Amino acid sequence: MTKQILILNGPNLNLLGKRQPEIYGHDTLEDVVANCSVLAEELGLTVTAAQSNHEGDIIDQIHSARDTAAGIIINPAAFTHTSVAILDALNAFDGIVLEVHISNVHKRESFRHQSYVSLRADGVIAGFGVEGYTLALRRMASVLT
Ligand code: CA2
Image (cartoon, rainbow, N blue to C red; front, side):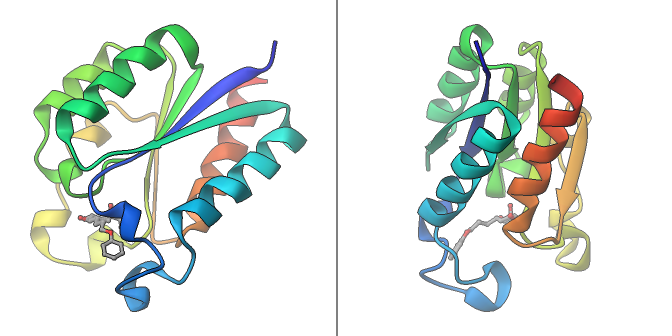
């Protein structure tokens, strides 16, 4: 059985590629997931993907992943900087957690420099655009296979 990776995206990332391309680029979230699915096959992994604008939904997705996924690639978006609840959910997940940010959060407003999720993440990628998701997937493959 191939190992499953959950790609989990937080609020407003459904708008990726549709607004603010100067910060987040032109690729849509559907493009990102499609690219990851193709790469996952090459790497011998399977991916599932979810996006939600609601904190509780993201927590429920992390809980479900406890039984199904070997790793989570998460871009918690604005919840990165606010959500102890998402941190607690990730702390109850035993697999690999990689945190991805499309933009370089450290070059932006100071409130984006703090990440609750980084207290749990096994690795963090920021500022590589949407390529960060495929880089994270490659890292998953090196750690898990
Ligand atoms: O750089 C990232 O990936 C962020 O997680 C994106 C979040 C932001 O709050 C974080 O500080 C950094 C914002 C996601 C909003 O996504 C949009 C995409 C296109 C158009 C509008 C919003």
